[in-house]
Amino acid sequence: MPFLFFYVCPMNKTNFYAGPAILPQEVIQQAQEAVKDFAGTGLSILEVSHRSKEFVKIMDDARGLVRELMQLNDDREVLFLHGGGLSQFHMVPMNLLNESETASYFDTGTWAHGAIEEAKLFGKVHIACSSKDTNYNHIPKEISIASDSKYVHVTSNNTIYGTQLNFANHQSLLTNYSVVCDMSSDIFSRQLDYNQFDLIYAAAQKNAGAAGVTIVVVNKNILGKVDRKIPRMLDYRLHIEKESMLNTPSVFAVYVSYLTLQWIKKEGIKTIEERNARKAKKLYDAIDNSSLFTGNVAKEDRSVMNVCFTMKDKSLEKKFAEYTLAKGIVGIEGHRSVGGFRASIYNAMPESGVDVLVHAINDFKV
Ligand SMILES: *Cc1c(COP(=O)(O)O)cnc(C)c1O
Image (cartoon, rainbow, N blue to C red; front, side, top):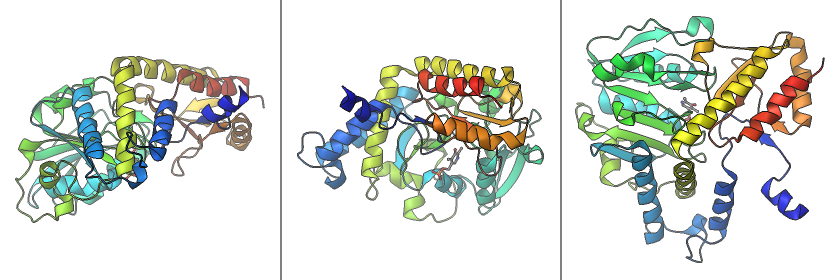
């Protein structure tokens, strides 16, 4: 059935893009069906009112799925917002930090640094640690938190550099402080006590759907404590009150997240975590066992989501890029600030996809 083959896998590509990124095939097929006929309405998801009972149910179910997957306490609220991860860089301090107050920030990558710059617009920022001097090739071990910190901001996975926080190393931080976490590139990738965080945010386009929506989970008890006036669209309390329908939500993106969350529930986070660990091990082993390639970051801080590597002989990188492209491998060029290669192997990447790249690394001949 060659036709079916082309439908499922249009050009036999393996997608390692960092974001927007690979989605489960069944999510793409279900989204395709909803573009034609959404929930039996006879209308496309692209033309249906966000106030229709069918879509209101999707929004409610999507928020419920996040609650269920994270096993959230009752004081946690789940929101689907606009504006990407970047908008959270200013919404967080705007809602949580008075001008005279201090927040501590981990400076572990480009996104973490971006969050710092925005927070400075609203209050005082203490840098708890930084690996900027070494182009963010590790997570610093020495952490200093300002004792009067209103909150501590961490980035759980540094998408561009390929480092990831091991929360087991930060238990006292999580116990003693109000922690805000940018989980954009590793949300739902591992089992965690999600109630340890007072605020979690994640742009959906890496591990939780398509571009256009950002998941926010917030402890409502920390809100309403700043003096400043907050524009309506940037006020978490209003979004909570209006159940993520303060204005027209990104209907289609919310729908794709809903489908992705259902897929995550079906697979189970435990199964996903184990598969992610196997995928990452395979790829790092291939890099470590090769005489041509080398990993970029400290081994103990290696990300399970974004595997960053270079060639010992830089002049071979163009040749390897062409070699992989011919094998249908897409999106492994490293971020422009790092160079080399980055293979993003998010939840939706099957083990067979990682095998394609592992074979390319093993088989590439100079
Ligand atoms: C991609 C990413 C962002 C930025 O998300 P946008 O939706 O592009 O604004 C922020 N933080 C992290 C960790 C990311 O990976």
